[in-house]
Image (cartoon, rainbow, N blue to C red):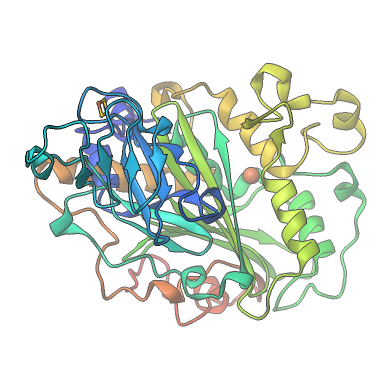
Length: 433
Ligand code: FES
Ligand SMILES: [Fe+2]
């Protein structure tokens, strides 16, 4: 459980809140690059950390992210005209560039220099890994640009998707660092009838063996290791041949979880608060070895951006249609009765309520990653009040080497040493980087 005061502390992220100020110290994705497809194209509403903003791509291709309300008398710049390196408010014509400077005020008297004194709040943006990222904190604290593995790959080796999740961002993140739900929430009925195979030996398990192990051993021993960028959580399961199956999910502060998966290709979830009762889930797939094929790209987009065809701004499967739960499927095919996997996650995390009250829950051994995440977030929020910078911002951290992992190790191997990649290994409890 988490005391009510600490729950409030980490769940509220609007301007001026401690957690909100801590989150504003990091680059956060706010849009897909494809949301702003052309220069001088349509402006787009963005709500992030409780702030209502407008994004636009100017004549030169630069992305601007500014307050939605015009500083003159508050009209929405969503209705503005985006042309000639700025967005013009349609009420009296005040025009702002991507830096927030007022560059034109045609309704002011000739010769006036009033426009030179007007500025609208604006946030710097960069484009990387298929996403537009913004930094909303104090300019003198702006960290280096995001440099995870997918930030370094060519665009054809990355697929980014974005979907709204209708609950507080902490609930969504807690699902991502919770290895123990795989054997239940995401289980197929057929998984109970699978058989082991010859990949039950040190190395990458086959997809069949992976499903077999998760179904046969629905429990996992959880170990957590602090790192300079956040922490890693490992779920350890036995295998029939006496080895150990390990999954390491890596949490990069503040909101990025690289999900334990076999092989070099992997996926990450980045959960960004919209307001206190909604968040955006960015899912980033990357393949360091080759470009994704068109069918791979299309199936990833279709599966991870399942929007309502009658209103593409909202998800197709949501609480008011019970996520299209099918009780027959639940008995015969998929334990959750809901498809696909991501929708299973939304159903359970949103069912906890818009902001879950953690003061009455009952945590057990499986929740080790969640407990550590909360501790780090509570301390980051408290630290901000005392002028202490939040964790994971040291520029010497080799972010591009951070990996998740899923593999099989021998029973007497140190799973952290044997299972880690790219030099990122250390004994349990030992802090790395
Ligand atoms: S309200 Fe925008 S120019 Fe007047
Ligand atoms: Fe899940």
